[in-house]
Image 1 (cartoon, rainbow, N blue to C red):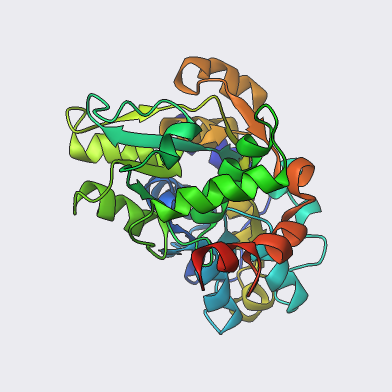
Image 2 (image 1 turned 30 degrees about the horizontal axis):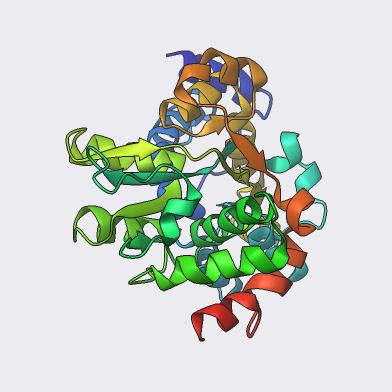
Length: 328
């Protein structure tokens, strides 16, 4: 009810629209449950305030794969990705406004996440922190950094912690990440596929994944199957959103699309994000849930790697470091 009231107040500022056709949210793998809940409430409130009944549709997959689909003609009205480069590439193509990061609060990131460890119940391999991941005989499940933001964040978290270890450097970080990926038996295209490999196919001793996905896996499998281990450090995963201006204009959904993304910042929607184990951008809401989101040192992609464009060029472009260490 709180979310319904908050959205009602927000939507009243837009007034009725001529028509409210389907709105397509193209997102990354591990947000589908959050948006399923959010979409139902948003559509109900929009109908109450405008008389229109929008059909909110979702599309999920590896973040970069999803961005590529939009580039290739998937007519998203909004995109809700897990890294800025997947929206920048759309802005470069003229699909998204150049100043998209200024159109919504917090650099257009309504919530954040981080990479955690999901292990078998009882942690039989005694995995406590990053150095344990390169031990002989440990199988690590990570989605493909070439197609998955989840995979890229996992890679960069591993690199940053190794670089900041005593005596660390870019050379020791590269060595650590090389050893880590030698322990990776399979690369799934996205985070949800990697979770299925670990949880359903029972492959691997540890899964590197977003915090909310780890909690979801525990909820779905039962707390007697897996548990979360928080490393001493990880990466700050900023999750930006944007209106796809070209397609929203084509569909006549500009007001609907903007209201949809604005609604993600309401206190009630921030509470819903916390419920789904996404870290709210609201300091007040995050503080209320501090016990649910353990504090750990979070490295920033901007501070550690010079931003996503530089990280992409150095680590994930064709023939860059990841291709070199993985033999692609």
